[in-house]
Length: 78
Image (cartoon, rainbow, N blue to C red; front, side):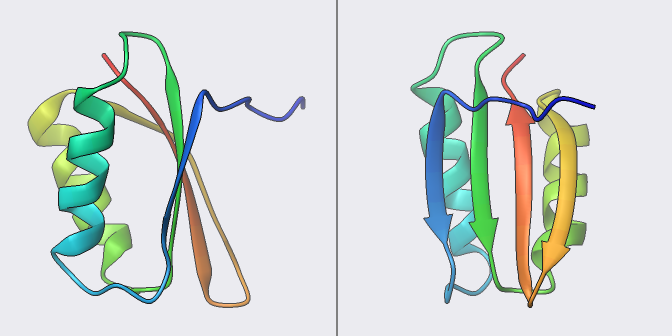
């Protein structure tokens, strides 16, 4: 499987809820439909937060992975 390419990156490592969601929303709002944001976060709560946020906004979490306590989300703007 080929790796998803991102159009923008956002580092939210070390931030706690709700900062990763707020920063993700602000960045996604400035992007065009179909573009992908790569967001990294260390807050374990960000997994549930991103799931809820994507369902509420219609933006799609294309992939999520975790390595060494860092969660990486690939989010496509709708």
